[in-house]
Amino acid sequence: MRTPPDQNQPRFEFEPDPKLEAFIEARAAEKAEAQAFQWRFRLVTIETMMLGLLVGAAGIALQKPPFLILRAAVMVAACCFGSGILLIGMTGAAGTSAKWLRRWWNRR
Image (cartoon, rainbow, N blue to C red; front, side, top):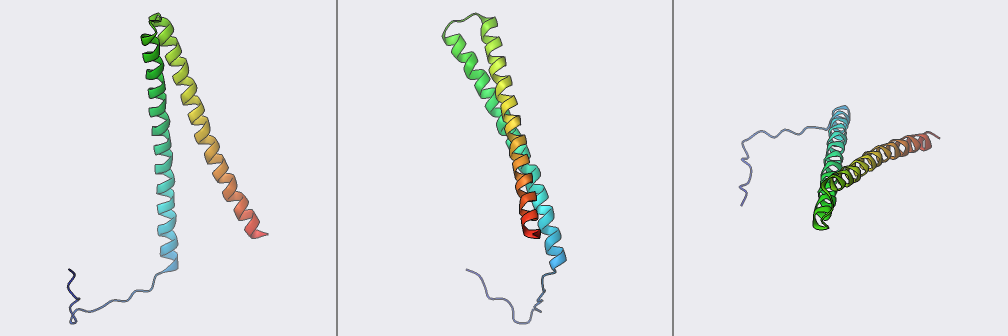
């Protein structure tokens, strides 16, 4: 349970500074965007490894030749990684263009 504040303690009432609030918001948004890109890249990398290993496991289970398994696993992993990176880029481009379109629309 919280104890009530001491009545003898001075109380400070600060009015929020709009410039400082805008600066803090901009920094937080910048950091969040950077972290979002890192998490997307990690997700694509993990999915790439999983699909490559699953194709390799399927080839082993079907008793295919090792070179064929390796080639198929590498091809699937490369395609998965390429499409994931392309998707990250297209998502970023769509977000940037939506932001530009919103600013343009608000200026009209």
